[in-house]
Length: 439
Length: 180
Image 1: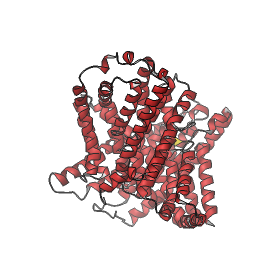
Image 2 (image 1 turned 45 degrees about the horizontal axis):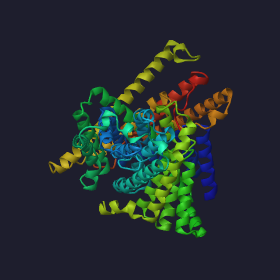
Image 3 (image 1 turned 90 degrees about the horizontal axis):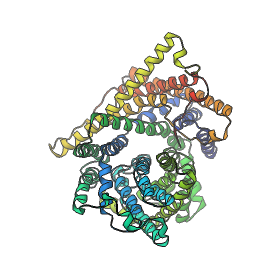
Image 4 (image 1 turned 120 degrees about the vertical axis):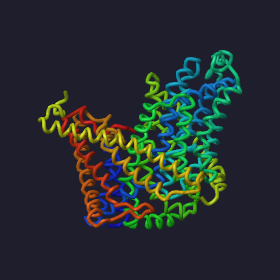
């Protein structure tokens, strides 16, 4: 069987099963069982069993449930509410301060957890009603919440970054650290956009005096800063230990869990019930993600066995496309597909296909996969099926879906602009990983 | 009560379903506890290495083994809750009868896929057991101690998919849950 028949046949089968609504892990099991049978016969089934075993026992993936449980503990402990109140005090008397608060708070939440949906839900339930009550524009408020939530998978710790690093066989520590400056860049771009929009269209935000009348916006700046210090401790327990070379990403995720527990105890939010719920939630989310990986990893091995990986590389070389055009094509494809398909499922398909192309074009792997992570994040924001959109909708059911759709687009284009900057100035992504050394 | 629900079955089937549910629940509770155990193991490693200068040889391997346990002890519960991630585009465009037919077809496919995968992984586990295959790691253990959880998770999931199919039609047959 020629490689392109195997590859296109496999992809058509997989996409058909996805679009028919078959659970994604079942679709991968079907594809891989058929693929193994076609290429190796029954004797090859052991390969499939071993691919499941080796993925399920991959040490780097242990960070996935640990990052999730860390975020769950922080969300359930009340630590996020303390951050919210402190930031509300710290943002100065500027028009549109709640938009600024939303984006800065999201960036900080991103440094404490890695789940965009959780942040969209949290802000949708807490900040969004306040913004609307104070007279902020509903659509623009929704947009800033979506934009803020999109920062979370980029700013470490990030479950998606660990998954990409594992699949692409690059350093998980470097992938995590690589997200820091892009996350800050996008935060800055969002803030600039928001402030310009509010200046051009003052009706988007209420009068400053009315806005700052809330008691939460008053009080000691020093106390507000002091209340935020313990949260910085959790960030240090994860990213600080990775960057200092004290802990591997998985170990840092575990120390982050301890940091979150200490913080929860400090805020008197620690209880047996909260802990068991957080652990159950982590087991739920991690198993749903990782069963897909376990059932899908054989796909990349089949691509190699069938000769598709090598042939695809030769095909790409034959195209003689300039590197910039190839990069654009490699980002545009997932940009479109992520609108309709699950992030992890699509990563499992695209990453093994992209790996030989990256080597041919000698793209820096951390740079490329971080750009890919940003595209995957955008997928959560793009209508019609961005999951972050639905997380906000479920938190604010009275807001029409069309309003949420319209709200997301300006920020999608800002992220695309940010990606262009990251592509043109690779140091934004590669500087911090380079400073980490060869780890 | 839904047509074809477990409660309408014969006492033996009902008891078996009840037992299956209990095992599923216990497995998930254990999986949640093991997430905590993974965190504890890796923290212990950091403390042992940096505070006592005595790195362990076993924490990484234990973390790996426990991760497999977390995944495959949780999966039956995820299937029971109909929580598996799926794309939910097509259902909006089908008639109720079409949705029922499609969900039945998906259920049959899911049962078949999980049973075949359970058979494949179960056969490999049996081979590991009969040939006394050990893990290649700093903490070697018989490989089947870990790999047996894979056919367990897949077989139990197949049974939950089958029970959802048997529960009849329409709203009771929810194959997917965490929708895009």
